View 1 (cartoon, rainbow, N blue to C red):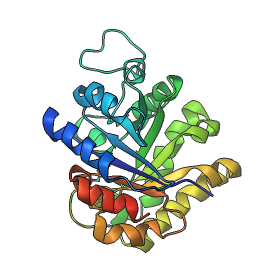
View 2 (cartoon, helix red, strand yellow; view 1 turned 90 degrees about the vertical axis):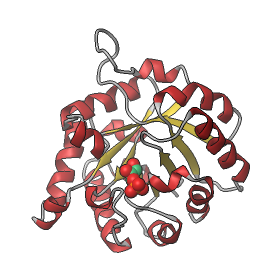
View 3 (cartoon, rainbow, N blue to C red; view 1 turned 180 degrees about the horizontal axis):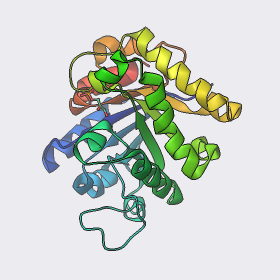
Length: 248
Ligand code: 13P
């Protein structure tokens, strides 16, 4: 049985004070539950939040990680740096990074690799745009996004990774994929991995992201291949984030 996982992606929101308050409220509201829970905070808030989550069930993650280990890469944050702040996870290949900051399948694969080398679990985001969905390119897009990582690091690297299916058309738009639409792609991803390694496919957490909220989380999480969620807007409010988590 796979463990479920709910991750908050705060994106570029909040202040130091609001971030710390949010974390305190999340910790205070956590009911016993066997599923994993994490928040991916802006880099600068990681040290402060790292202190707050010590000895709690709430794990910490970053929203990105550099594709190189160190050196003259102004503005980048390495996996080694993140690992100094108890970062358990790092998101790689979020569609906002791919769209606005030029991340490519290849650079995302390198980020994935860097995270793992420092013991950080990459949360690899994959997903199609509306145009690609309408042109029946959903699965070929997903193949390309997965293959870039598989070709660089091998299928075995998915033994310690999370995949987030985030249809670009559902992110921040209020348009959630239906339970069946999301399940169809999650099942596809699991089968794609299974074709190369059944044990990894059975074990890997594939979580859904894109306008997930308390009202639709239960239905999504009930689907066979949906192991949790990567939550944007609704993770900025402790009550709604906890409701989503507790509906697993
Ligand atoms: P929303 O939940 O705000 O649609 O964002 C989803 C997302 O991008 C999580 O990474």
